[in-house]
Length: 539
Image (cartoon, rainbow, N blue to C red):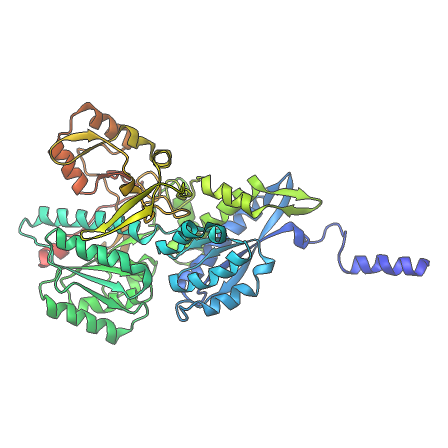
């Protein structure tokens, strides 16, 4: 009998039970799957951002629940979704680990994410999307809440709201170009990836440019997200043939084609200014690797030395030290991991030595929590549809969709409280803001999608500029136009005093400085100046 007892004790020791001083047991670990195309910079930034958050959290003592410490462990899931956009690779890779992880972050290509997120949804594992813009993904939460309530947006804003920021940057460029050369006439070509996420912004841009009276040639052109030199050179040739005087190409790129474009545009159309979305241009090495980077303007996540929040510049510096690269937007997994940890620390509990939590409680926490990380002034998601409020969304002139779910007035004012005292103009009279469901439909203000606004997430725009010896990435938007207030409080006071007449206010609205999302006449610490001199003088 003594021998049997001895053998049992020995066996327990061998398998590592109750051994003081050993590494944490499995129940002392919170596992997060990081999904992305890991042979590409987009997935690599997913992983690097998550690793930075993991290392900082673990170094600070880990996740604390009821005074008990747990460490963060990452599980890398290579979805190969740029090469295999169907998502089948991602489905297999995530399925292999889903039972062993607590949460999922990452995702890039919409078509792929739509497939492999089902693995997480079926397992009731929270998936924080940090790469796919398409509103349709979060719209699933509205149409089938029970199945998709586990799905949240971490970055970026959806394509409709990205277009809002992009249009503000274009308006700024055209205004400044006209100030330098009064005879300037914008002649714009729209060049977009042939991908699901670009459909709304490219069609809206075309309709809006036509309505504004801009010359847009024969419309818009499409290229594959991974198009090579022959395809890109070919489409640039078509754009030039359609209008040899094209002076702006409005780009909507998230894939590797952005680099190929930057190698070809200067050969085929040297007098064009490129402005829009080009994820490749966010990279640290773009200025040395891209043949025609100089002057390019693009929506960005971060720029060197620019403090979107008090934590941003330090994050960017640490990321560069870790990887040798500027972070691109998919590195916002850093904020996503912190958000999940905060939710777990709020809603988790300890049963014996094991961390426990109800996934539904984490969902409710994330639906209402706001935080300031490194990517936005304040981050949060749009709330659940109330089940009754509907409106019509006017996507662009000539296209509208009626009967869409919409935020109600209380939900709007909870997110944008300053609207209660805001005033707007119809170019004839100034009146108080009035709630209209049509202005708050889902799309684009969709449940679990990122809240957009001057006090929330709005992104930045950067430009590659030659300083005499090298190309530097410079943040050029948002930017203060002098003579106007540079903060919301002062602006509302001036507006409330009646000092702004109807015509002036209408012009500010048309310029994109004032809208239902906020007052955009501000800049971040470290913002530089827009440089259009070389381009405008070359026309």
